[in-house]
Each structure stands twice: as structure tokens, then as C-alpha cells.
Image 1 (tube, rainbow, N blue to C red):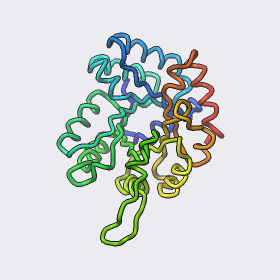
Image 2 (image 1 turned 180 degrees about the horizontal axis):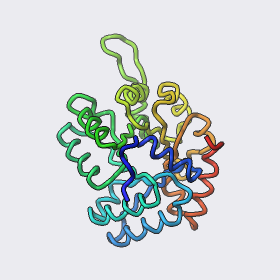
Image 3 (image 1 turned 45 degrees about the horizontal axis):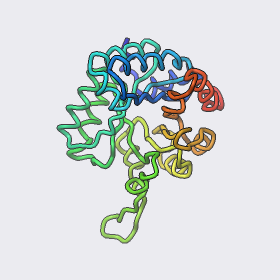
Image 4 (image 1 turned 30 degrees about the vertical axis):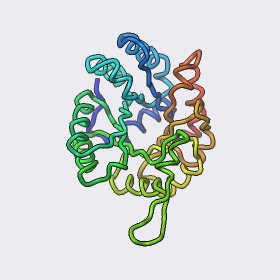
Length: 259
């Protein structure tokens, strides 16, 4: 069943988080197999981890691999466990293209998608935000990615108008996340100092989603202390000998109290 979109995405994922006592978003990024094998593997991962996660994030490569019909079946299964779903598209194009892609993900039943602030507002992401929020879909803005090369874009210094003042790009993107009423901001757990600074800008109005725990070197304890609200974890769970056990351990580490 599809989750009730009458409630905002932030409320839906928070409800799932509290119910399962977990801030873990399972990331499924499989693609190197036949479509039926990718589908069966994704279902198996969800079955093993569903009691220890609050959402499932799919990489674009997974959805392209399994196709529309199997995607719909995947989302139906996940929603049946009262978990939210996130499409990691990193939307970054002109408005007409963004609108078409967003409508497709909405029709499939996704609860949220990731968007890249580099596209800008006018003629870029404005229509996406209007459409998504009108239909109850959440939008997660990429503020600082988790890989080493992210510093070349998100970490670069930007001249402010005609003045000689410069500011880091990620600070500007964090401010845009607030201004645009994003439903989340993605900041890599590999950079707890960046998480802390972004939290200062976002306050409590935009939750932080942090990828990069485990395989990429990020740590839950440090990122949680810095201000992360949800952790997007893929390979450290999906490649574990027992994904269910790994997810349960991460879930326990992610929740300090029953807030």
C-alpha cells in the first residue's frame, strides 16, 4: 500500500523512525545482475532489515535495472511495512525536464527524491518544488556529498556579488534548503564539521540525511553529535554477512533516546 501523502514526508519518515527505533535509511544501489536478480535481492534486503530501518533509498541504477513494473512492486512491498521510499536521482536540469522526471517518480509512488541546488530556482527547481509539495512528495537537497571530490564543488568558495566577500558553496545551498522549504538536506557523514555548520544554518526546520557511514569512513557517533538526523547506509549493510544484524546494530547506534 502507498503511504498516506496527506501527511508531509518529514512526518511520515519520523513516524517510521520512532516506530522502529531507528534513524537508518537503507540504500539499495544494486545493478550488476539480471533484472529479476536485482529485484529479488532488493526484496530480500528489505525483508531482512525492515524492523531496523525507517526508509529505503534507491539509486537510479537500481530502478533503471529493474524497470517500471518491478519498481512498483518493490515500493508496494516497502510501503506495506510502513516505510518511506526515497529516489536518489540528484535532479539537476531545466524545469521542463525536472517536471517530467518528478511526475514519473510520483506516479511510481516514491515518497521523496534528491535534488541538486546547482540547478538553481528560476527555470530549474521551482516547478519541481511546487509539484512535489502539492502532491505530498518530499525533496532532499544535496548540500555536501560524501565522496572526496565533493570539495571541488560543494566546498568551493564563491564570490558574493560584486563584493570581495567569499562563502563556501555548501553554506549557500544550506540556506537555499531553508528558503525553498526542502524536506531534508544531504550532508556526508564523512565531514562532521560540515554537518555541524550546516546544522547551525538549518536549525530544526530541515533534517539532515548523512550518507558515507562505514565503507566511506563516516562514523555514526561523530555525525550524530554534529547534528545528523538520519543516516543513509548502503554497502556496510547490503554487503554484510548478515544484513539484518548489521542494520540492527546501526539502528541501535543511531538512536540516543526515544525523542
